[in-house]
Image 1: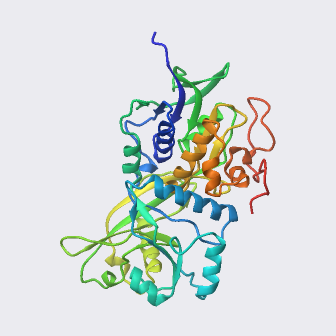
Image 2 (image 1 turned 90 degrees about the vertical axis):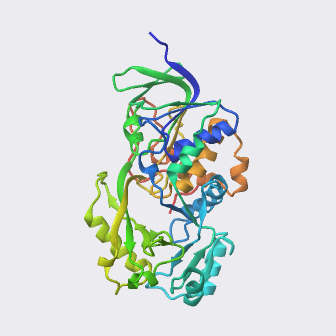
Image 3 (image 1 turned 60 degrees about the vertical axis):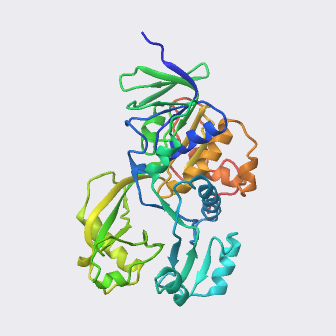
Length: 408
């Protein structure tokens, strides 16, 4: 009988998050084994080739605003090799009057200078973005292929071991060592430290060690439309990405003169069906009208040319779950990235590496990463007290933070 492999660090999941964490640990001089149920990296939601990245500037949670700024700065550096910087425009909400001074002061309060976020009136936006609407211009906003990024990160390396077509269904701890078991309860490998980065599958896996995570799926469908060169829509198509009620990428003109335009995405909470839906395309056509303020446009002119369907994983409070599982020493989580996989993966790589290697968080501190932000991401925020017994369950009720003020 072959003795199962033992590794100091195992990362479960070879999507964008697991790949980024593994790459960071290798960069820090550690040997890493990454294991995935598929035969190659980025086969699930991370197969997305049309993801966008920009800091959140809405009127959301103060922690979310601070976290996305830090994550965006880290992502810019992390994804330089595939960072398609075309800029992102966020239009003013229809029920709000554009006030340049008010918006400038608000952006300044978020520590966003004009190189990251700048208010534009409708004429300025028309000149820069091709969209005659007021709003905020995010010139460093970008899009990228999560699949391409993941594959680059997991290129052959002497300190990287990859186990493909290997599904881990159970964790078991004995004498300070973690055993990773397969569907037949057979031990596949063991590790001193395990990083769980498998989105919704984290919920079932962590339940085998008495941890219940408040995760749920959200199905999303992005539609790829074809528009004829002489159609009225052609004059409304943006030169940049737009993020508002939905999002879109810049339109691409093809050799035959027609345009290709990616618009999304539907938000089907609690659903995990990966099949394409005509209803989702219809929803995205309506989104398209709002994004470019062309409500009189004939949606029948947006001809379906393709789509992408993915299932996001979200937590109850919509923040990612990133950090050490203090109740189960040696287990680290990176899940619930939702629709911000580009940003949260870059942040997770730094945070998880710092915790795995017992760092002092000096790098993250320089980016403004404070103790309350660490608490806002920590798995422990969902636990009603410490888990004293192996069979205890985490609370799925209102989050409780171990330190720092409660999130608003």
